[in-house]
Image (cartoon, rainbow, N blue to C red):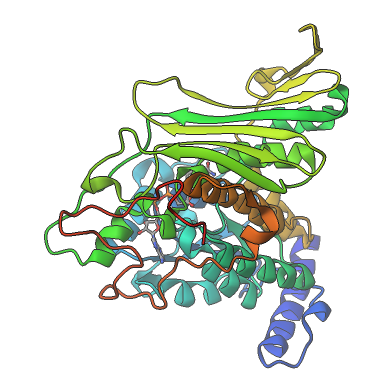
Length: 448
Ligand SMILES: NC(=O)c1ccc[n+]([C@@H]2O[C@H](COP(=O)([O-])OP(=O)(O)OC[C@H]3O[C@@H](n4cnc5c(N)ncnc54)[C@H](O)[C@@H]3O)[C@@H](O)[C@H]2O)c1
């Protein structure tokens, strides 16, 4: 960082600290916190806290620590100590001690024992210590972690989905509004927005005229399973095997297929007004698979009459495809092929994939560059919430087999979460005497 920037940052830091103190004491209205987007600390270091130290959290921390700014990981929080340790060991592994393009990741890690926090309340201890927080737990916890980060006036990177139920969406939308007033940068890990090919296609979307329909796919074999272990409480088991529980994961239409649904919302510039669909579990059977489906097929209807046909499947041995297609009055955008064609197939635009970037890195590069410059550039929480809600709407449609309207769904008050998080509290869904969990049955299951 240049001296000019350092001086600027130091002054801004003092203002930030002063204003944060006033805000904490309730003496300043949030909109006056015009400089809350600048970092704090004893020097110009941007301090990072990681909440949710799993695969993605470790990756996101690595990307944040690989940016050009003067960054340091200073706190880690996880529900489980072994997961936190695994993440810490990966981050400080020998290969990260090498100087890589001027960055030595391991040297940017300063997380002594007293800043490693474990348990359901770990986030409350880690967030206050940082300037930037990385929120990468299973999505069920995102609303409360995001709320806390906004309350503490932090800059935020949070993974998708941002909730698993409409009650969580409402909390995220309310906190997003406060984040805007406080001018806190918020990036959501819907990384196609940071991917060169998607950005170039988006710039040229008018080449296809009005979008009249779309298709989106996330079809593959499925994901990991963590089997029940001896002596686990039900809460620990579900937390370890979180993918298979709707309150924690949202089902795979929400957890993975959100990426494709989000692209269609982005290019359409809005969200659907209703959805209907079908789904079930054909091969995902037995005790290890909790309550989620292995396939969903949904028609999402937009206000202008256009329809997104969306499909996601987790069934080994079937066709794999992760892609989006937008069809307009004058042509088609084929996202994976990164091109735009006219109705006869003539290529109107082809993105050269040699120019493709790593969008996971770019989202951090751009976020941290903005923070270091004191810029307020990213307000992604709202569109993250809208795309999450779209995928929840799809799930409500496939679980119930009914036509579900957006307004009714988002205002349904559906809240899947326990009142309290504790290892001995019973989770909201429990197995029967054979160890099997209740699974939604279309035609029987009500959407709230
Ligand atoms: N953008 C992407 O392409 C992408 C890719 C992978 C994952 N993700 C998202 O990242 C999130 C995490 O996924 P993952 O693959 O890293 O899962 P993971 O299981 O590897 O990691 C989750 C971590 O969070 C911890 N955790 C659970 N509850 C917690 C709590 N209440 N407080 C603190 N820590 C808690 C777990 O112990 C675990 O270490 C998910 O929302 C997922 O959808 C996004």
